[in-house]
Length: 443
Figure 1 (tube, helix red, strand yellow):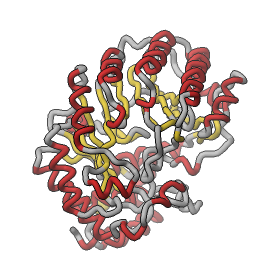
Figure 2 (tube, helix red, strand yellow):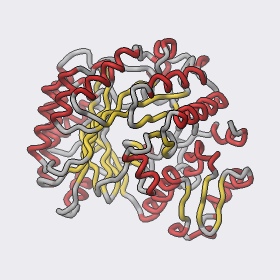
Figure 3 (tube, rainbow, N blue to C red):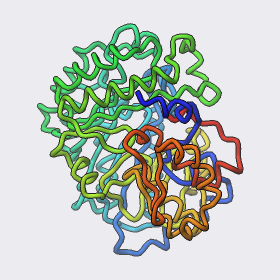
């Protein structure tokens, strides 16, 4: 572990899946504004869809997502009915657009049974042109993967699945409320591959209770025997002020900053030993994977889905809390299912808040994205070094420590500084300086 990182790893910083980040959205962006934004999209532009499924069979204690426990069938049935109506509203505004990407997130998308999933996808296909659908991804809980839904995903053209593994050690699983024996994960992988789905991602975490370097290494060693194409290694974000369920996690069992740094470094070394290529802040992929190739070619991008290869001009979010990314700005649906349903019943897009991008926002967003993806960035669009005096002052300690370099209007991160790229990006975040939004630790 590089001792220079410790002070910066303690800092709080956003994950920068958007800029500005969601805490800075406001109600000034409403359904009328978003309708005008959608209407203004050129007819030739393709779109992507993000479908948020807000329900889980039970809530895992570590989770920071917008999700609710559904212990009865009715909430999920009502969700499906309302989602189809939301699709109709979007189709009315946009017309029959070409959809090139679909991503299902949650929550637990496979709380939908095979028939419900097929019903939604058939409605998407009836509403939009999916003939050029290139990327179709879904996030799954391995505990609820079976042959029937695996075959339904394959029939719908799903070509990438992300399995939420988190950790494969019994004591850690007990402490995070996610008991998931290895045999269940293996069975899920086998069912998906038998159905013909080749692209399989694993999501792992460090920084969990009762987790040490050995536990991380064990989870990785076991995971790679199943040869996932990609592995995302997220640092657990302990934010109990934001997600009350995390109060069930014993804080005394959480690793401190130094141990988190050791875990992240040990995981990187272990994954590289197994032949995976490090990508951005927290992703790893086999060398022939599309994401690894994009990173090598400088085509890596950052979105609400994490690191992605490319993006459509517009990403339209569907379902409670889903966020749309449009050329004009961001728009977030009502996070609570009741408010989301009520808006749609009134024939309105269920927008709760958003943000209209200024030109300065666009420039800073691209710079922060470049720092997060490529670990370097061009300062000239901001006016170069002379116009970035405040940002350079904020970075001065890292520059003195040899972690960041600014030369010829370019900012570059040393190899050792990659784990703290969020902190470097935050130096260019004008909103962070105006508000006291609380975030997770940078590492």
